[in-house]
Length: 395
Ligand code: MG
Picture 1 (cartoon, rainbow, N blue to C red):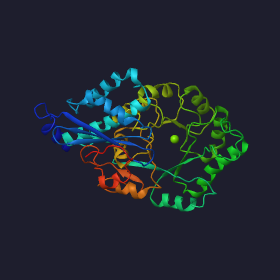
Picture 2: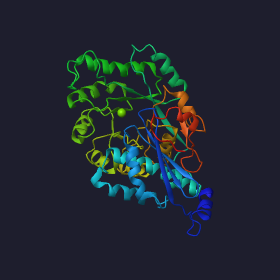
Picture 3: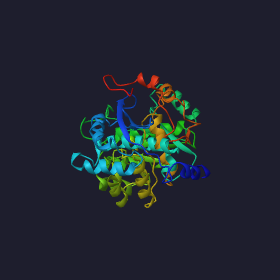
Picture 4: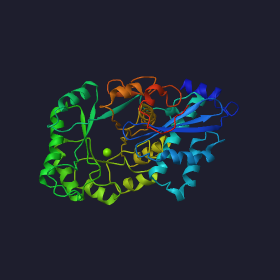
């Protein structure tokens, strides 16, 4: 607090508030999980903000370009006002969800990084201050089957890294037991295979490591109810999207049928998307993807809305250390944070190389940085090696 008080007195008093203008915006795609879009907003004072939007961002670059006319010359510190202006301008262009909100999220995150750097404060401070110093992270396991010869080694690696929670995928469109390649009613053998994955992981993981299970929103209500019921003995942290997320009543139907907690929301956008999920009591846990849900402040607003329903938030996250740390600032600032996703177990070398600060982990947790803005700088030499061919670069 003395730091905040000093910063307020010296940097953002009405007399000393930095006067910045947005001068330029650049972006690129990298090949990591999906092809996230990294965006930079440059000010006329030499500092820039770095943002990232997630793997649904095919086409985000073009949408970001379309915002340039609106943003150039504007004060980047008025983050929410600029966000609201872009959103309302896009109402007839898809600003309710999808690519539009994804691109908006990347820009919003870059604006927070820039604002934090301009006033010398970490983003969590601008979001209301922090409730916790380090963020609990779960590992997306990349293994879940007793027939995988690498399973034992991978699970041991996850435990050795210090993770306290793991997620597995149990849906399988290629299961040889399937009778139909289009219909998603699982038969007895398929359900047996799904339940066995949870059983195998529960056998392999220490008791104090939580397990979540993802069905990727593919199956019908009858299948979802059967699987949720059969998974009850494993006391899961959650069952993720057993049915597609867009039918809130169907999700509620599944939730009401089981003691297994239901989690949903990685493809839900803005507060408006989460409102019916909460109002209809369709979920136990929400999981907005902060790099596409609308950005950092929108994620905070969604968390606050969920908190009024006593629903915790476990953000979906598949992005680089830059986007992950941006998410950590939100996770630090909200009361109802549960756990944050991490999806790099098969790409550890790049994860550690991606930013100049190196590996941001500390035994399965991420300490929230106190450096201004998001607090990380891209290691351009390493990241250029995974740049998408024929995309622009920042320099
Ligand atoms: Mg998922």
